[in-house]
Amino acid sequence: MLSKQTIDIIKSTVPVLEVHGTTITKRFYQLLFTAHPELLHMFNHANQTKGRQQTALANAVYAAALHIDKLEMILPAVKQIAHKHRSLGVKAEHYPIVGQMLLTAIKDVLGDAATEEILGAWAEAYGIIANVFIETEAEMYKQAEQQNGGWADYRAFRVERKVRESDVITSFYLVPEDGGALPAFEPGQYVSVKVHIPGETYTHIRQYSLSGGPGKPYYRISVKREDEFPNRPGGKVSRYLHEQINQADVLWLSAPAGHFTLDRMDTRPVVLISGGVGLTPLVSMLSTLTESHSDRPVTFIHAAQNASVHALRSEVEELASRASQVSLYWCYDKPTEDDRAAQAFHKEGYIDLPWLQDVVPTKDASFYFCGPEPFMRMVFGLLKEWGVASEDIHYEFFGPSGSLEAAPETTAQPQETASAQG
Ligand SMILES: Cc1cc2nc3c(=O)[nH]c(=O)nc-3n(C[C@H](O)[C@H](O)[C@H](O)COP(=O)(O)OP(=O)(O)OC[C@H]3O[C@@H](n4cnc5c(N)ncnc54)[C@H](O)[C@@H]3O)c2cc1C
Ligand code: HEM
Image (cartoon, rainbow, N blue to C red; front, side):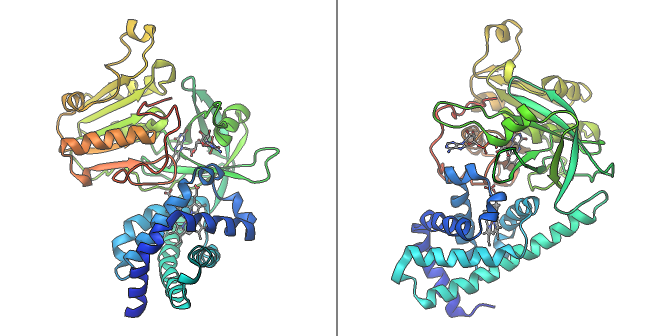
């Protein structure tokens, strides 16, 4: 237990540290990667460049510090982060390294203001916070390994099939190389894929949501190719998967993880809203709902630029055709003349509130959504404006987690508007 004096010091210094939040975490990552370059195998370099990971870490540490005398308050947030840590392979022995670098970073940035007393208090607090993570993750490692067909760390999977789903999205059907069983997963969960790209110094790990329902003899991921633009490089892993990984190649996967899952005990209507490649976890949820013969009314809304980048359309239509209580809606913000002629979509432009209220039977429903961040901010804003209860709003970021309640953390890339993109 921390003494009252230590708790008081922590609480009084949180606002000071928050002011220097990302300066401290940026310094922290410099120190970390200089002393432990091997950790560059684990961290996402693009997230570092864009500053997203620094902000996520800073926010998490300060939230934990603020609640240091009632850590149970932050347990849901800890679990969410722990899912990602477990999926990546973060281990107990990494925590002292991170703790030491964080304290050095605080000292470097605050200078003389970081007294021995303050640093001592933070060292103690970090130890307590780290233990909560270590215990939560130990339980998750155990569960991942001990479940039927489970495994620890990474397991080799063979690409059984590679299927083009749209101009930019391709699916990979993956089966365990060892021929063993596959664990069940919750619809909405993701796997981490670790790749060794020829010519690269470090391995790269990315998360991909499982885009099919559970209970199949394979896992399927559907990956959007992140193309190069004049002002930004192409995506490392997505392009490698698209361009160099083919049938019979091997990929390394950690066991399914993630908190963005369909609540199967809930019996109320469910609304699944996706933009671009954000449809993957929602297709898994839809698949589960239809295959389990649920009688919950389901509204599935997908936004894409147009039919050329609209992935998994026929599969979703086939799923819906088996269940009369499922309604599908396609929103295209850049339909082509062919799309218009074929009446390939239900709404032109972005989703708006009058339209949403028209197609969704009730706001007393569970809403799940995923897509590019500006798209998610728009959907979140509409749901709030409609008065949907906070506990009925569930979303997943395809990058470092953040909160849609807060202002955007980074400026959008030129092509990142509320558009659903591919
Ligand atoms: C829980 C979760 C589930 C996910 N599910 C899916 C899924 O089902 N399907 C899917 O396709 N993706 C999914 N993702 C996203 C996926 O993990 C990858 O982030 C995505 O494939 C891009 O990885 P990449 O290596 O191709 O791009 P990266 O190399 O990581 O680059 C990412 C983006 O940053 C830009 N960038 C890189 N460096 C810079 C720089 N220096 N300056 C400016 N911009 C830069 C790139 O152009 C690219 O657009 C998911 C992510 C999470 C967290
Ligand atoms: C108490 C200590 C820690 C806190 C508060 C913390 C917090 C976070 C947060 C908030 C995220 C983003 C989660 C998300 O996107 O959903 C994250 C991701 C991550 N963490 Fe931690 N973390 C801690 C310790 C560690 C340790 C010890 C390691 C191992 C060296 C580690 C490695 C990572 C990695 C590799 C990611 C993913 C980064 C990326 O994708 O860019 N973390 N952590």
